[in-house]
Image 1 (spheres, rainbow, N blue to C red):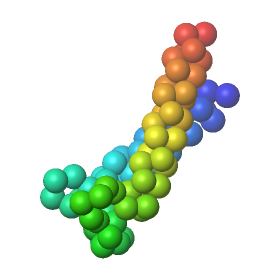
Image 2 (tube, rainbow, N blue to C red):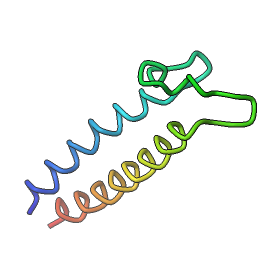
Image 3 (cartoon, one colour):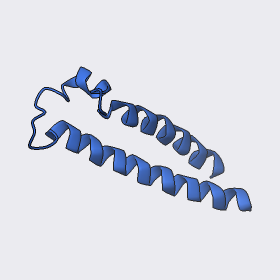
Amino acid sequence: MLIVVLVVHVAVCLGLIFLILLHSGKGGGLSDMFGGGLGATAAGSTVVEKNLDRITLVAALMFTISSIALAFLMDK
């Protein structure tokens, strides 16, 4: 069980790093490469950015859950 949680944790970590790098900051970020900056208006963020935010939030929750699971499994 520990190995499975560890593999999931590492995969989520790498995915979370990738997703965070895709976010556009003040300079535009890597999301401009995938069309994230095409529809940016003063009204708010684009649909791409909103979906990226949701996916990143899910990945962060998975990271939190896998971290807690690893802590409990390592305690045994």
